[in-house]
Length: 191
Image 1 (tube, rainbow, N blue to C red):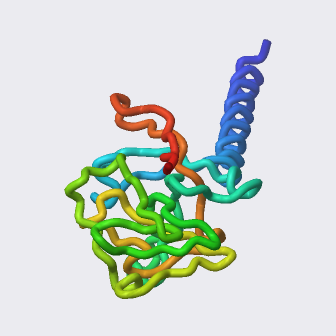
Image 2 (image 1 turned 45 degrees about the vertical axis):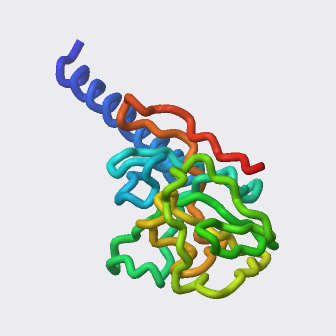
């Protein structure tokens, strides 16, 4: 057997394997799920800066975000991300289309009822931001109110208003790094 022919066959097989692998990765990345890194302290204590999560990009094509879901979305212009960075935020859904949101008495009130949030420390101060100060926010047909879990240190819908479904990249569903905290991300179910 010709050694040159064997070597070229080996390299063609390698190239074919690499192209197929990259194609599968690209399809999964573009259409099904995407990794994201948590940057900053806005989701403490439930997510730490530097953790990595997988974002499900297809669930919200077939359904809508629910109260308590942790979502990744493109930062709104009012968040003042550095231009060209394509920065994405990770926050929790506090209000869905048709809800009314009010920030008062150190709490969120959704549809007039105080939101029971046992996933954050009781001593976290929940203050209104520039958008929610002295007002009740009525969410439109395609609007979601999102908030970081670390209320004193989160730039969220309190500051820049609701986001649209089109801005949402997907639902954070699995934390994979660091290994010690790896596991499914379970949406919080409010009473």
